[in-house]
Length: 265
Image (cartoon, rainbow, N blue to C red; front, side, top):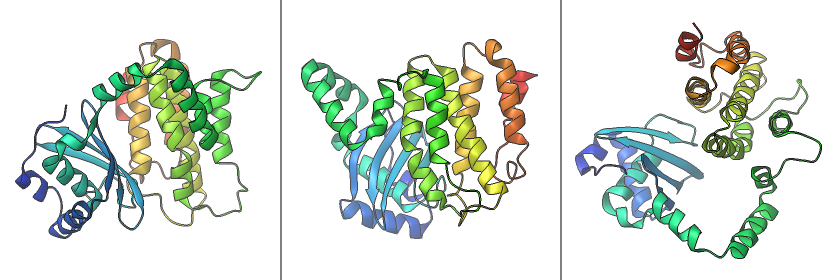
């Protein structure tokens, strides 16, 4: 559970300008769908757009991510989320409470909820079933390929890539919880490798949001190094790391993979 924080903690987190903007967002009630995990907070925050914000609170240290252009830099949306937790912690839905509420639901009602959600978000179907005739890993690779399926001559808005990958990032978390580390790792490898290729070819209309590429690399590295079957995947991981680091843009985007290289020896 995130620790308690003080007003001074929040005011010192970002610049005075970002704090004032975040304070205004909070006062306007634009922090929605508040969720509390065992290690941090998440919510949807409105301002000039709708942004997904995540905060990890470790003692007196905060680490944040936002889907706004500032990415992992300290933005007003992160400030607004922290202010909401500071002043209204009881309004956050906890992971434990959500699990209890779901367990109390009738099984038939849950099935109906998921089917209705899948009608709106067809991507969710991949959490439950793979297309006939294809194994799960092949299906994952094809889903990533579909996101990046456009002519090399076409300039791409990187935000289009970021938004299209969100369900796959959630699916990767689900796969890891199921113990399918290799499947989850492949999601991050494919997205990272293809995104770096776009940057190498100067095929984006603008840069990816700050630290987006580095965050994917961190998630890839965490999955690779924490995989209980690391030894069995050593050759594949070695090839993936070599392919990622061969991109001209890797270093400039903050992709180093030192931990996985160390484990590979």
